[in-house]
Length: 252
Length: 362
Image 1 (cartoon, rainbow over the protein chains, first blue to last red):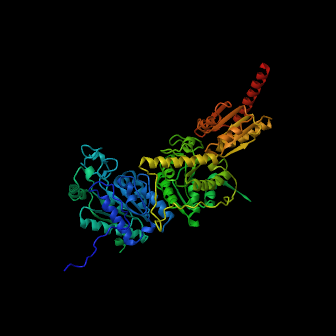
Image 2: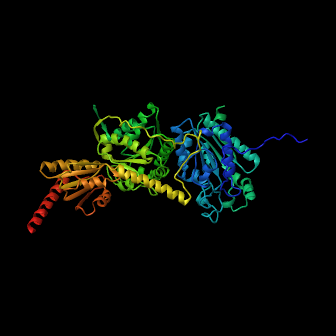
Image 3: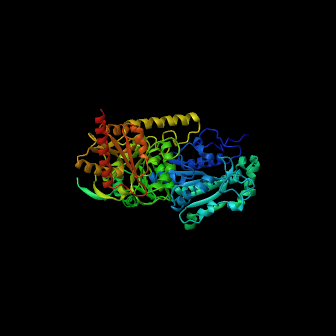
């Protein structure tokens, strides 16, 4: 007897049919899917506006079928603030990389978080500048080789910035969490975190951010499978996974 | 209609609110702080958005977001702050988003001082940020025009889907004058079918300046240039004051023009034929209007609170048609009326002598 077919997976209709330009083994594709699924989960596609960053995911608008605005490098939280203040009924999110959010856009993310701006930020941390060709990012790990730290990131270049820890000290944000996408269980947890973050905005609870540790095989100079393994072996020691701020839990 | 005594900065607030400003974002800087304080006091009770940003970079990006959402958005600043906004202004231009930016100019370069100056003319009229774009630049010369031009700026921004600058200075911003609190002309609001509203019942929109394929960016630039040519055809504005028979024409904008206007009156009192051509739009520069004011002119005097920025546009318009005298100031200095009258008197007498000697030779 063959059991009745049960559909266990389907491509989110919030994704376009386009094939992404991302390198093999890159995490952006998974994170795009999780964002699309979270939007689908709440049925908010028709009132969502996403602010795209400058970086590898500058072309995210080709893959996620929602209204999008560009922002100058680092300014996505400010553009998102403008949209949200103008139209509080819209669901407004940013999708940013580590160079965008934690270097050139540090002021914008810190102040959006500190205002408790009712937006959601998806922060993809792969510890390197991808689009410009593998330079040191603010999140590059000490000793990590990049084109601008050819002998490895040195102490006088600063240890990596820990965004969740930093924003977690603030009073205003509603939800700050760090997740990864290195194995199926982790992907499921990441999706849950994104759903929680989006829910906070929909409940008018204020600022939420999910940091996703994501592999960059190309600029880690590793084959995709090894790159994924490196997240657990090497990245989570610097960037421990977990919830760094949960105002609802604090209030409960 | 009764007039109210108010500063130019307060008139900007009044003009913006009457124009239907939805969202204001700004960062404190002297000498424009009355505007941000005025917005903070006035907008929230009207149910409109006021937000003090963490920087001018953020302020202009917030304007970008609100404009992308289809709202009337503005920011105001002064010279060093407007320099920081150039990034965002370029993105607004490239994304074809309407917005209003008011610059209450102060002394530069760098931190300079907080005295009135006109040193940002090049920055304002040549685009200012990266890439090949222009923005309409309106130059008020009174508190009344600070009000009138602010609402004019919103209509122009919407009409051409472009950022529009109001280029003023600390003198006009701080000075109090009687202002008629009039409403904008009743024009039909431009529809914004391109606004980001969530992709309901339509394809998703992406508002951007990004166009990676060469043919796409080339075409985008052609479209922008077409808009700029249309603006150049339709929008040059200037005030011609007593220029019909003028042998000596002053040309100046904003606060400088006020000084020249007074000098013209005093010279006329002496029976000397002086006039003033005041550009109101600095871009597009009113080339034709300037030339038309020079029908009888023997000399043109260009005065600005900078060292020869508008002078470039005047030279492009006038070429060698009449001799040009230039008076430049910076750092908060400005010519005295006495100085302008003395110069006018000297130049008019010189041209009279020249004509007389020409006559003898013949």
